[in-house]
Image (tube, rainbow, N blue to C red; front, side):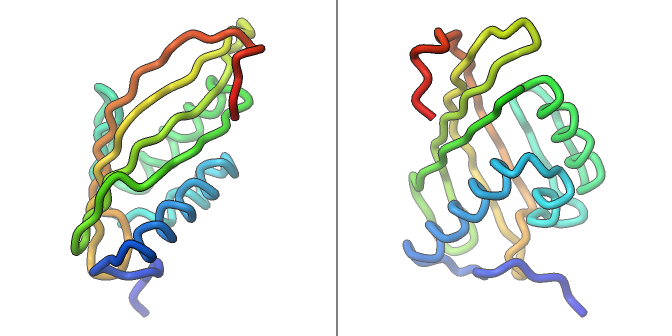
Length: 137
C-alpha cells in the first residue's frame, strides 16, 4: 500500500492551511518519529547551513534539535501556495542548557510528492536572544 499524508496536492488555501497546522502540531509534539512520517523516505532538507537527506537523517536531526532547544514552542503561518508547494513563515522559542532564551524567525519552502509527503524542505532561520519575560509563545 502506498504511504499517503492527507491532504494531497494540488493545494487550495484551505488544504494548505490544514497542512501547515498539521506540521505545527507535529513539531510541537517534539516526537522525531511522528514528525518524520510527514516526509518522503528520500526527503531533502536544507536547515540553515545543514543538509539532511532521508527520513532517518530527519529523525536524528530532530532528536539532536530537541535535546538542545529546550521548552521548544512553534507557530507557523501560510505565506503562499501553489499546486504542490507551500511557503510558510514561522517563529519559535526555546532555551538552551544555559537557560538563555531565543526566538527563531524564518521561512520555509515545501514541495510535496503526489502522496502528500514532503519531498523537499528549505528553511532559512535566524535566532534572536530574548529575555524570558519577552516570550510570546
